[in-house]
Length: 88
Image (tube, rainbow, N blue to C red; front, top):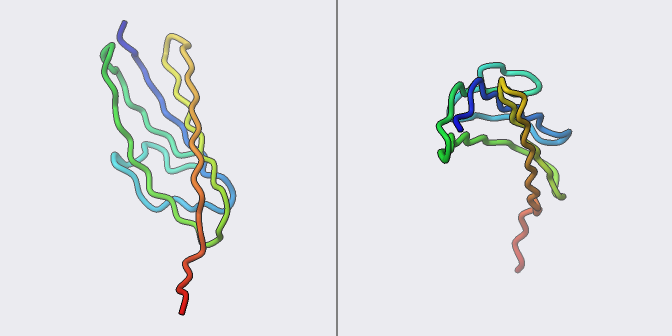
């Protein structure tokens, strides 16, 4: 079954700053929001987001998607940011 009226939302957590996205968000928020329209069953619609941080630590980013039919999906990813060091 096709997904109609699909909207994706991402709210960068404190410490992560939005830099760019492909495609560009429909709403530059926060939260960032993409109106993706209809997505045929079995297909995906990639959204690539670049964020920046200056502090080391673990960053967690969650994305929420909803459709006009009321379907909801949520997924999160974590990444570890290290401070660059050079040993001599």
